[in-house]
Figure 1 (cartoon, rainbow, N blue to C red):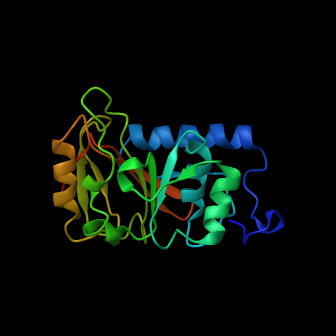
Figure 2: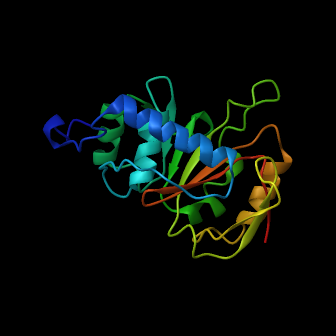
Length: 203
């Protein structure tokens, strides 16, 4: 943090109240309608390797009361300074302590960042779990998966690319633990796709 001067920080929202409210509505829509791609209308500058959509989620949801975990690529001086200055959030090393997690490479979830390592919540407080912001190479150019569950009238088709080979098995285990478990928001560019723990996947 000390190596990054305030004058070197990239700006966040031009209109923080309006832009945060707008993005919050989009996030809610993404998680209440799993599998439908949503676009965050307000672009925001952010340090690499974070996407604009990932930064918008952090600016909207993370604050001084929340703990955020960053993967190795995101854990750089510029991004740490950006999040601390604009969000005021507490950055943690322990995955299980995080309210939100930034994963810049979705393939990492297949090994060291297995979903069960993040906070799962409890039966009494299932909301005390981690929401993962997962960056992927694309939202519509990957293998076909079918979603079913609350918020889906019949089934939705998703084509998220860049997921680990064992993702479907990991997600099935996550869904089986309901009401505990993590929620995911896939991010690419300015677009997001929600995958809450209530949603089942079939290949």
